[in-house]
Length: 287
Image (cartoon, rainbow, N blue to C red; front, top):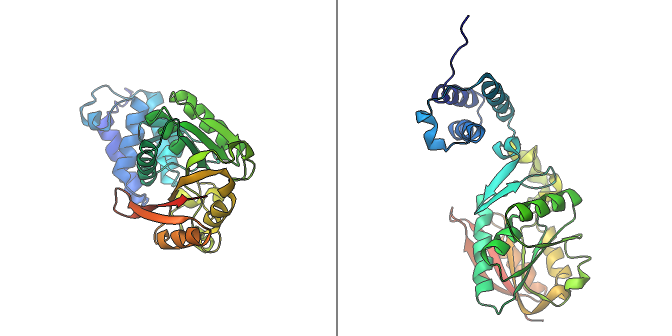
């Protein structure tokens, strides 16, 4: 019996239909991204890809679709994520970097541009290193530092920095605790801390709830625990007139600015992401 010839346009259509039946979000995009990554082509080239898939490729793609059908995120299936100009290796202890966070980098770069060089930037809770590596890559005159409590996350971040040709000094620390060597020397502090309210974690989408590490999501009862810690613990690290750039969850901006004001920081601005949601707040430490 002659083997069935499988073409990319047909297999991706079948996969999207299968994912749609399983109520997977954005089924067409998931099917296309996984196949384009497998074949090392652009998504738009799939309809014109004339070379039949090999049996090995067909089997691997079927396995990918089964994993996506079980709500494993596309990035976890691939083992990597894309962020600004970066390709980032993931680890179980790291969040998948999201497009919302790209706007945080823009705000930091604006602050850095106004400061003398070298400007020291510290990214607290770096995860994959997405923020820190982007800053180091796009503003190479910066002295960029990044910390995380997870050794596995730091290992992934260090590999990501090397793979993307960026120079970042990584530190293992519990948020700002243990960074005494940076005391009084940070011009810009940035963080995307855990900010999900604990009681809402169970209601998150399976792609987040079941695959992102809970420690990187859980912001305490009101979602604000880590902001309180940052405002309390980071002060000894900051130079006078240092800028603070913090990612925030929906509806949290005013609460975070209020907490910062009560801790002696001067609230400055809120900033929106590409979806026009308030995603970032800035404050200043006068020392």
